[in-house]
Length: 447
Image (cartoon, rainbow, N blue to C red; front, side, top):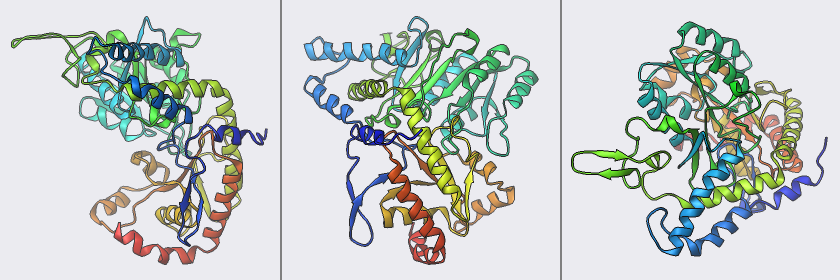
């Protein structure tokens, strides 16, 4: 299926989509953003709703004035809207507003420590550092293995669940990889986890802007217990994220952040914490961020997540087919697949460091990509088959070339024409690679 001019309609939803940026020859060109996995530009609707709300901005849960009551009502109604967006029953689940996915997963790690101190947490080699590091200092953590092409081995998950005989209390897994774009079978993983007495957390940062998520499908065994995501990857960059989970999991122990808004009673001798979600939202809530998130959800649903997913799959398949035919480019993961991926393609050019490729694309063509390890170093190390000796060289030698990849990641507003420009640029860079190593060597040394 070719979507033709559909991308131009989606493009009109984006603030600054046609912004001109300077390139090294002194010309200005229309910027091409292929770094959406890191952060997305704002929807026009998000900016408009924030501006519309601004005159009514006031404190949440902290005043009797009209503006404060209006802000508080909007903030509380937002929880129901967010739960509805992912089909989570408000009688069972609560939505806690945080800064981003990283804070959400850190908060959940403290919550689990309050509930299950002596347990095993299963993560995977696919994870972003934010779904790995918060668990390491509190629990015994094991990592579900991956295949040679970087996919999760569900069979290894079951082996580990059986091995630990009920001591695994949480399987925390990415919904979609920020390196290969692979979507994990989260409901199959949920059913396996529940079968062996564990709950499941889905890091939805890379999944929720690109694909619909159903926390309560038809079979209860497949329910998702916890979900974390960030608004800044959903075209709403105003510092808000969400942690969704069962209400009763947030009732034990002390909250990780303590302060205003988290208590019912405080004396010099004792504290009675408020109920969830309020005990988990210390300080003045980010009402502007919540307004932005609601506007983004409304826009995503107006376009429909099914349309977004289909269109981005077409972009990904088109780009992968073009890149495959460029000599000396290695694409990581299954480059032939598009239906079980979000719009991410990671690659390297033989003989060129990933940083040089990214700099050339930016400085010469105005194309923004990401390069490096994307905050997923164990996964990159596995995919690149790095040895312990390679890693020791990296640690011991500051000038040893850092491993990594170049990543292209799509948003709903990107176009086939933009992909064609990137392909032309990559063909040129690959054909003239001998010129680029020296050209950007001084730049790399200055970093």
